[in-house]
Each structure stands twice: as C-alpha cells, then as structure tokens.
Length: 81
Length: 187
Image 1 (cartoon, each protein chain N blue to C red):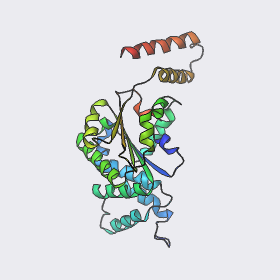
Image 2 (image 1 turned 180 degrees about the horizontal axis):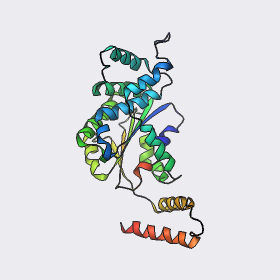
Image 3 (image 1 turned 180 degrees about the vertical axis):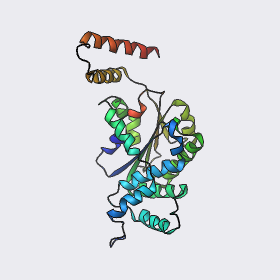
Image 4 (image 1 turned 90 degrees about the vertical axis):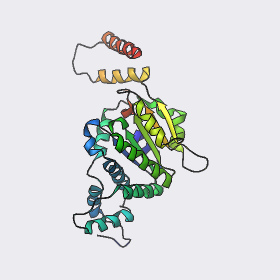
C-alpha cells in the first residue's frame, strides 16, 4: 500500500521491519540498560578519544570513524552507557 | 553507549548488536547486518521509499526472496547518508571469525559511502588485531578496565538492593568493598 508520495504507510511498517530481520537486538539492549548502575563507566565518555570519535562528522581532515574498546571478560564493556 | 549516542538531540539513528558466543547460528554476517538495517530503517518516521520499493519487488517473487549482503550494505550506506548513524557492536569475540571478517568489511564499506557514520566496537583484546586489519588508520583503540570508584559505586548500588534484613551494617559493607578492591588490584 502506498500514499501519494509513494512512501509505505504504517500498515506495511511492521511487515517490512520483520522482513528485514527476525532478530530483536533492542530487547537485549533493554535488559542491559535495566541492569546498568548510574554513572559507572562514565569516565570513558569524557575522554578526549571518545569525544573526538563522537563529534567527527566525516568532513575536512581525515577522521577516525571507528572506536574499539578492548578489555578482558567482566570489566564492564557491555555496560558502557 | 547506545543511550549516550542517542541523547545528543540531533536527528540520529543508533543501531546495536550484542554478540553472544552461544548463539553463533543467529550471528551470520547477513543476520547481523540485517538486524542493524532493521534498526536504522525503524528510526525513520516513515519507511524510506527505497526500502519499501525493494520490499515490494522481493515480495512478488515466489517465496519472497531474502535480501543479500551487498544489498543490505548498500541500503545501510544510503540510509546512513540521510541521517547520522551510530553502529555499536558489543563483544566481537562472540562472533565466528569468518562472519566477523565480513561484518568488519561491510562496516568499512558503509563508512566509505557515508563518512559521517560512526562505529563503536568492544571485545577482548585479541580481537583488536582483526579490527586493525580492516580499519588500519581509522580506529581509536582504548583499553577498558574498571576504575576503583566505579567498583565502589557498583558494589554500593548492589548492596543497597540487598533484601536480607539485619545482616548488613556499615562495617560489613566497608569490609566487602575493601576485600573486592584488594582482589581486583591483584588480578
């Protein structure tokens, strides 16, 4: 079904999303968010590395578009806010 | 991380994937990229026309053909150019090596199409080599280890949820924090 602009109307929306993938990663995200302790790990978000990664817009001088945080099992990587 | 990226106020999309080493069947490169695409598409108020068109074309085919990886990558690149997109993939060590290679290559292709996109990855240190291979000069590497104040804050938050009445007092609480910090510093 299409409206005048040829854009899918909401009745198609859930069907299209289900066709794109049967997985629901946001459910796991919700669990993690629920178990996170406020402010823990926020130091990372204040680092220069994180700020420059986050604010880079792909314009001008070459930028680093990827950030890889490494750490052993259980150090809290998953729970970074 | 997904929440931090989502709080900046600008019009952005955040797509995440948490790898789980016990669920590798569901973590083929195609399923992972498909799950990312689903989230990016879902962030638009209306399904973008190019996605809806492909959906209709595929639906007409017998059995409703699935999307292939190159198509998914092309769509992700194109949609990421329309609004700033953050991809967050957690625990890369939980992904099978051949799939990880395809996923990293795909992310690299997406950034080429849409240079403002941002990719945030986590994993055990040994996966860093793989990441460096596909993003040689484009990656910021940061080592994560729990800070003492993080540990204290975490333990206190968990102790505050303790439902056993009468057993816990300030002395015992301080003792627990002290012991855990000592153990961590020896690790």
